Length: 67
Image 1 (cartoon, rainbow, N blue to C red):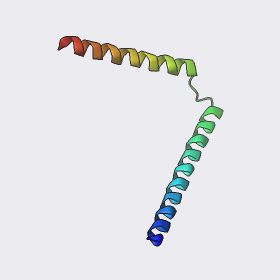
Image 2 (image 1 turned 60 degrees about the vertical axis):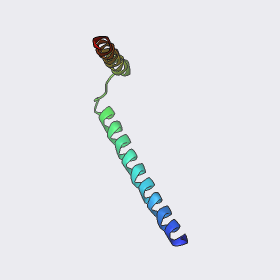
Image 3 (image 1 turned 30 degrees about the vertical axis):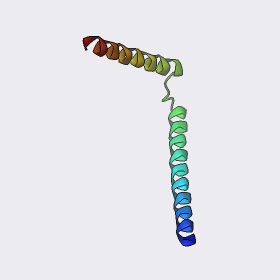
Image 4 (image 1 turned 120 degrees about the vertical axis):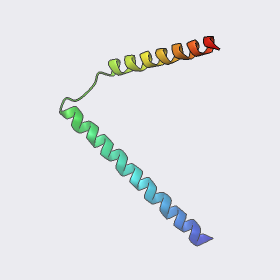
């Protein structure tokens, strides 16, 4: 049982390390894109998200009304 526990602990550690490496790579990609000027204004992004939510809510209300 102890061997199994140790094996699982090692697996968890490797998964954690892989996820951390992936996160660091994504952060680096973002930094490099930002340095190239490839950025989107945060206000625009949130406005688009809010519009998507409004559309989805309207579609849900239409579907409910059609029942």
